[in-house]
Length: 378
Image 1 (cartoon, helix red, strand yellow):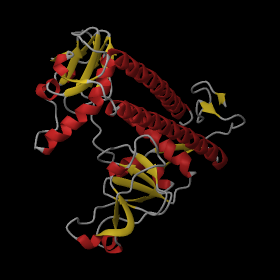
Image 2 (cartoon, helix red, strand yellow):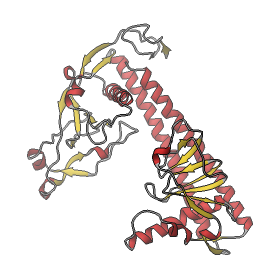
Image 3 (cartoon, one colour):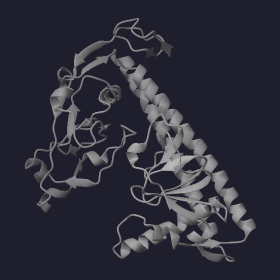
Image 4 (tube, one colour):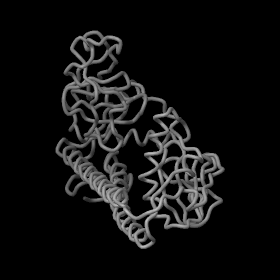
């Protein structure tokens, strides 16, 4: 692969494969493909559903892979005849234009979509090149619209997208290259999922087979407090970690907590438990556990097993799916002898380090893909 100086040569991307040196052409999408809309058959008519024609909504598309999507519903030919949805052929480029705007995928069979989609068929491009080019274009649109909410993309806007493209052989090479990247990312996700599953099986087996232990309430082994801040207190350029009820970590300019801690999401990602050592602050609906009398890594393992059980019991009696202080303070956990606690903590540390390494590899792949998307298309 060779690298060009930005804008030094007109109508070529910054990065190209070796020996690819022709100038790219350009055209609006409306001149290069057919546009097909979607629709939703009446859910009141049971004769329209449980047929053999795949039908998807925007929720069925995945953010991270343009070659994978879920199909959870099927419709009948009567549904197609009596609604706005249309049967699209294999290799249709499906673009979400409303809820979940920007998701995009290639169909692997004939398919129907909801009205949230704009579908491209009969296009004059390599299919993989086109889907990645459009993904890159839509990502640029999102970046240029930061600070505002993108509520949708109209069919007219997509038709007027000016797409640059090389000769078909180079298109195929680029499309195949990104498809291979996505396959490696999918494999890495699978590796992480399997490691996490292995971790859970090991720790559940150890914990559930403890014989010599005492049951203690959580408030007997640590102090439990809550964060005090609103989510808008975060600052992307802040110095300290800011924990909310989301999987992602954020930053803030000040801190209220310091030391070895467990942070538990009270709503949102209810029951998510994070381990952290250092200065940080927390959202008002997160619980902060500190001043442990037992190893906090072992406490984390015990809570990962006992807390879901407690939440399930409370849900069955009609409680709302969020955590209150009594949910945590009253929870009972098994405490074995000190040596066994330390050994379990060592196992946790080893497994979590391995998972963290694999997650960093995934993040590196995603960063590389983002860079390549930005530089291998115009």
